[in-house]
Length: 132
Image (tube, rainbow, N blue to C red; front, side):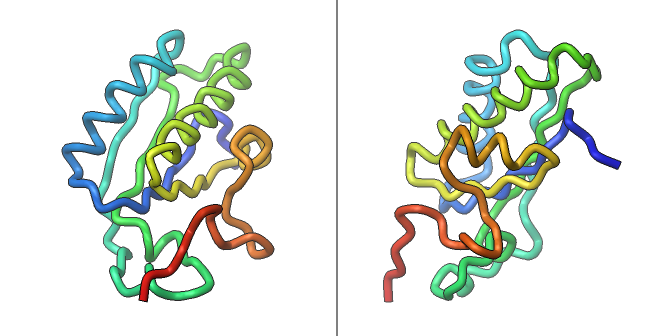
């Protein structure tokens, strides 16, 4: 069943989990101030360091963490605002050279507002370069 109040972010970064959690807490306050949300960071058990050197990009294997973002209340009037705020969160995280891939029912909004999300046709994140 579609859930317009929830999304999962795959985060490809070398940061420690506490750094990412701290940044997300700050961004939550700045971006989602009118919504009651929950952001939880998890270590990705499918992460494989070697996958970062391969083409095509495998966002699940390349992401050290995944983040669940969801509203605490399902208020229909806030759906578009929440989804737009998620896109802003993604843009903010990407601005510091993290690769963020979003898995949700509103991926089209993410693409329209941020310029990219993983698809079979466009698997490579913008600005990704492989270091041999």
